[in-house]
Length: 130
Image: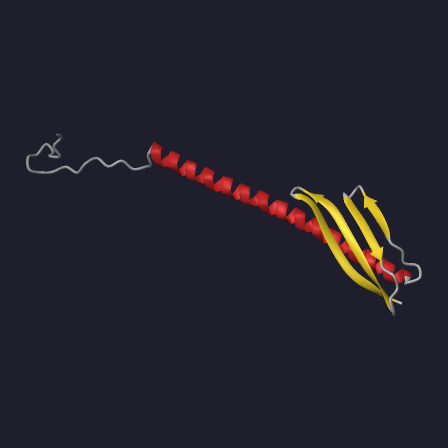
């Protein structure tokens, strides 16, 4: 066992103190930093996917609203059911104009597109006043 006594008997010398960090502390800090960065990257990827899905749904809702507005502008006499396939947007648009009942006709506009989780459908139901 080492004695902390100095050269002069009865006078204790303080143990040698080393400033700085050990290699173990540095390695633990690097591992914690790497885990944190992986968590941030994973969260960013999830946010990007959710944002892209929301953009597709917004585009489908906008196109369905535009189709319904166009059918209303044509009026009851000219409005016909139909289908449009937009390969560029990977979107299938199908609208159905019901028969005129009273002073209006019911219209269903269905938008279909592929998403990473499978096929998605947006349905807008409206009417045309005659």
